[in-house]
Image (cartoon, rainbow, N blue to C red; front, side):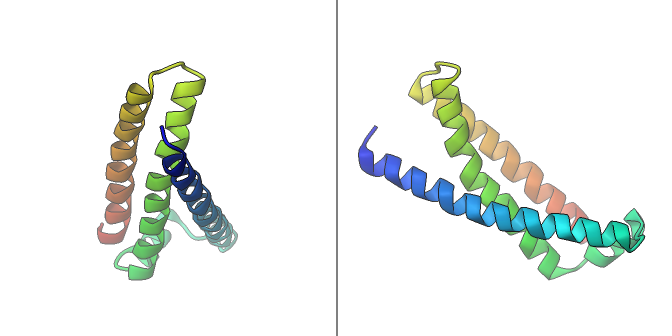
Amino acid sequence: MNAVGEAKRWYWQRISAMVLALCVVVHVAGMIYAVRGGLSAAEILGRTRGNLAFAAFYTTFVLACVVHVPIGLAKIFEEWLSMSRFLAITTSKLFTIMILFLGLRAVYGVYAG
């Protein structure tokens, strides 16, 4: 483990956290708007289907998760579960693949129907 690599991981986790924070605020504001406006699930899907801005926003959300989660998970696996560095990184990469696949699949499902 070298200091430059650790510094880069620290940097990318902080940058992705900033993107995630913004995405969460926009997502929650959108949910509040939809609920207060009395929109049904069908109406919400009607507005998101084919909407490139929606797809781009939620793809950004998923990609920020893909950057952020494995760095934190690897540290948790190492420090809390006493996994070896190799096993911690490998396990966190498996979670990353799952987040990427399921997240993009959800975006596609809501965008394309």
